[in-house]
Image (cartoon, rainbow, N blue to C red; front, side):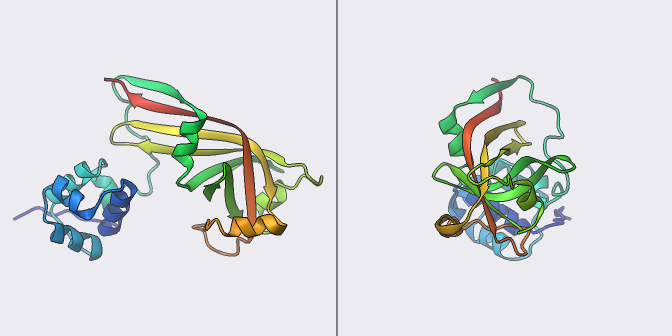
Length: 223
C-alpha cells in the first residue's frame, strides 16, 4: 500500500503561501517537484492527502521542510536544530536591512512599561523609511508610548527576523528610533498604508516609528 502523509494543517494553503513568498508560478513549482500542474492545482485548492514522496518533493522544490508544509512545526519555535557545520555571521548595511524588511509582515516592538521591559509582536508595513503598525486605544502600547510632552517621541526598538530551519541560516534587523501616535492628516496617510493586524479587534491607533539607527546581521553556512 502506498504510504500517505497525514497533514494536521492546511497543506494546500501552506504550499501556495510558500510558493508565492518565493515568487514562483504554479507551473514552475510543478516542474521542480516533478508532478503534474493540474495535480498541484488540486493540492493547493482542495483538502488532499498526497503521498509522503509528493510532500517531500514539494518541500525540496520550495526550499523548506516537509514538516513545515504539513503544519507539524506550527506551535514550535524556530531554530531548534544544531548550527550549520561552518556558520558565518555577517553584518548587514542599512540598504540591505531596509530591503529585507520592506515587504512588511510581523515584527517585534521592544519598549518599557510600568512593570519593566516588554516585547510585543505586531503586523507592520514600511512606508518611506518609517514603520507603521496599529494597536488598541488605551492598550499597553498606547499607554506606554505616551511621553506627556508635545513633540517628544518615546524611544523604542523594533526587530524583524527570518529563520531558515532547513539550511540553518537566517537574518535579523534591528531599528531604533522614536515612536509616536499618528494623528491628524498624518493618520490619513497611515490608514492608506493597508496595515492589518492579525489579532483583529478594534485597533484604531496607528503608531509610527522613525528609525535613527538600523543594523542587521545574517548567519550563512560557509562552504
